[in-house]
Image (tube, rainbow, N blue to C red; front, side):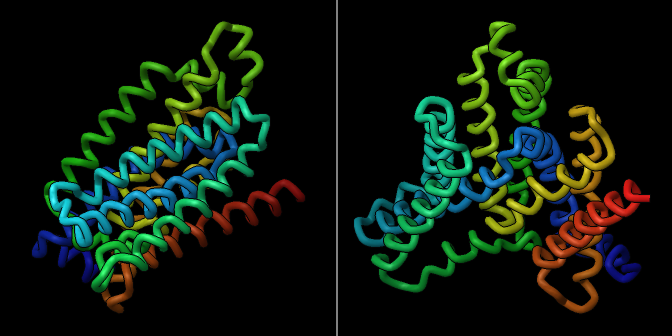
Length: 280
């Protein structure tokens, strides 16, 4: 690990990777805390996989119909927001369980994406990279995009903190207080979708799901306060990304995979340790 931190001072791509981890941690810590508290952790996975359908469509239009003015990010944003609205509306008004809507969106997005990928000539390496990503290949433009996401998430969280807190912990109480539960729930899902979309383009689907859910879930074992949970989740996320990058550097392992392993092992250790501590 000492070798890694020495290399950080010499190589800009490692500096960008570290900064990406820090910036992504802010959005993931805040949004992840809402998602975990609301018990809709699978929503990140559903949106992330539905995004593949939008990117597959854009790639198909690029290659087959020559619509080169479209970028994969456009398809990702539209499909991500669409997935958020579908999940929200079905959960609120169709009297279906949220996990059922999330599962349907997850499967539908993957299926649509695979159909368009199969019909697109050539090697679809770019689309496959969205599944796994590479945090070591981020650019300055990516960093600015994540910083903009952080600003949006922080502003949204500060402006509507009490409303979102009520919705996450006691939906009936929120309705009694006159809060438009449906509107703020869908807004929360849309913000989660934007977080997923932007980070998917940088670190891939698998790592996005891990960074949104595992740090917040880990933090939830140490506090009952949503605000403190957000702070702890952000710090855990910074630790996971930094430790993963450092551990993977020497043996030349995939950085994203190691980050996920560090996050997963830490979460399971906390769960088991907490269980053992309370059983004493």
